Image (cartoon, rainbow, N blue to C red; front, top):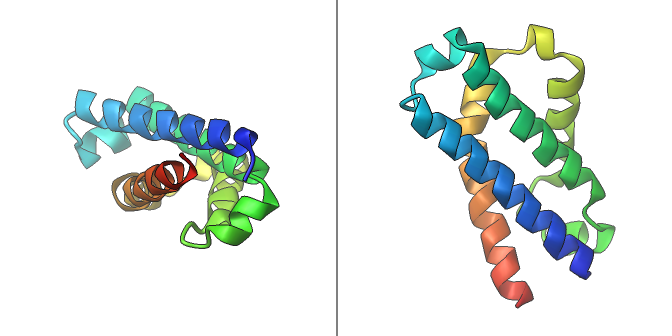
Length: 115
């Protein structure tokens, strides 16, 4: 694994934290998520960026750390970028509530191993 991967992983963590911060600001409320565009945009832009960063993680890291569904995160980025106006809010919320926290745990674990 390269130093570049470490930088990318830390940036992914920053975006995970930004989503958590947005959720805290709005009371982690799904009704607010579907009705307040600022909340939706804050979260979805971060998820889009996470997917974009997953695309540039080295193939070596992707091969070694298969606990992260790299391809799926890249696919989420494509959905958020190209189909944003038709975004399924429930799916986005599920990603925020379930997938992103799990990704954060895995990334933190990988960064600990890299030290």
